[in-house]
Image (tube, rainbow, N blue to C red; front, side, top):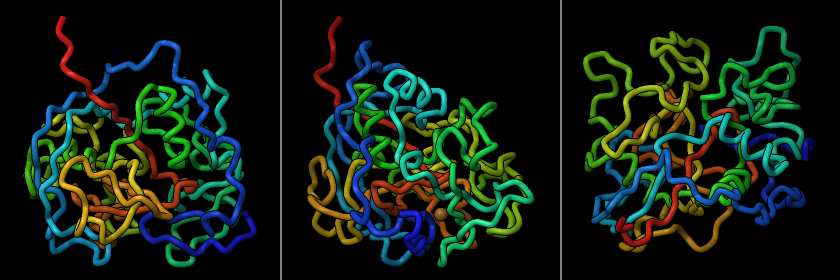
Length: 327
Ligand SMILES: [Cu+2]
């Protein structure tokens, strides 16, 4: 596969040719849940009624399908307050021996600006030359061989595919959130606002999330204090207690992605189209900036194929909430 054209992608590139390669062995669903059973610590339980999903935002990227705005009703569920960290993912691989898809393929997409000076030439994504195909890049080595996650154990794990995320969730006794669950939780009760805290990107000049500042992709002022990823608990949480729903890293959702899905989605517990080639990703990343894409808004949608991995792609987990436990 490493000989295929690396052409796709703008905000978040995909590995070329879904189905062009055999599913790596790591994709199987036989990862057993952790012996300790599901752990609800670090999660928030949302007792949901109804909310307005989507946006008619003028900054929506045409074709992403943020509209129409539609009413959605969700059953109660749990969702992680934070994205899964390198420490969390390390516990999973240590317990299971799980090997990620990036490790199977032998490479992943790394943002060029994060590569050290003098890094050997790598192939770039044609439509988005700031994305480089870096051999040896994976969650343990986010900028390729020679890099590691020491000092970043509390940062979100990256270079994890949708399949990797699903395997982790199964081990943790959890699952990936649906796109609707993700949006409801991320909004934190602020119906139809652009961001989890309101409509101002930087209220009173204050940074509320880890996104790009300056001129993308060459000049980053680091005004928010971060260039690549930030710790999963950076910044104040939203109204439902979620940290970094917007910015920092894109987060995988369970659903297949279709740009026209909202036009005909179910009102109750929508779970995405029945079929597809790419999975929904939400929240934007440390690379989002008004000069390039405003997918750091809470209603923004994008997608990536399930075996793809990049240095700005992570996830958080969710779980069904049964009847309220009476103690
Ligand atoms: Cu973006």
